[in-house]
Image 1 (cartoon, rainbow, N blue to C red):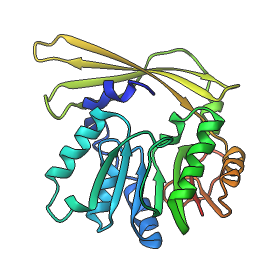
Image 2: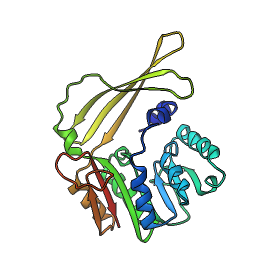
Image 3: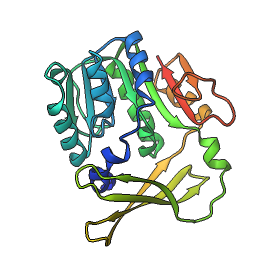
Image 4: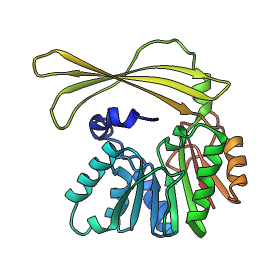
Length: 254
C-alpha cells in the first residue's frame, strides 16, 4: 500500500462522491453500540464525518498524510457543532498508541485488504480487541472473495468509471488491470487515471496496489484467535444474508 494513496489522494473524493451506501449501516451499528467510535483507515474522512454529524464522537486513524490533510480540510469546513466530534490521528494501526477505549471500531470498505500477512491480520484484530470496551463491537466490510475467484483473468484493461475531478473540473477516465494470485489470495491491481486537461491533452497516472482477499472460514478463525467470541455475518450492508453470490462479507464481532 506504500505510496498508493499518496498518488490517488487528489482523485479520491471525486471518485467516491456517490458512495453513501454504508452510512446507514454504520449509523445503525453506532446507535446500538454507542460512542466513542474508532475508524481504522479514515481516508479523507467520509465515514468519520458522517458519524460525527449523527452526534457521535469519532476518531479516525489514517497513515497517508495526503489523505489526512484532505480529511482535516473537510472537518474544518463542517458545521461548528460537528468539528469537535471528529478527530483524525496520523499513524499505522499496527504500531500506534491510543490512550482510550471505544464502544465501536470499524475497519470499513476493504481496508483490511491492505494487510497481507497473518501476523498483520492477527496483530490488527488483537489491537482492536484491546481498544474495545467489554461488549463493544467491531465492524468489518469486505468483498465476497468467491465472486473474484469465480472470475476469469484476462489481463484486459477495463474502464471502471468516469468522473469529474472536483477541484479542476477535468474529466477522469479510471481504468484497471488486475491479476489474481489464487494461492496467496492476492489481487494485483494497476489503476490507471487518464485526466483530460484543459487543452484536450491527456495526462496519465498509474497507481499499482495489492489487495488481500479473505474467506469467511478464515475470518472466523482469525477473530477467534483475537478473542472475539460472537459473530454476525451479512452479505451486504443492508443486513441481507451471506449466501453464494452475495456482493459483500460484512462482519460484526464482539
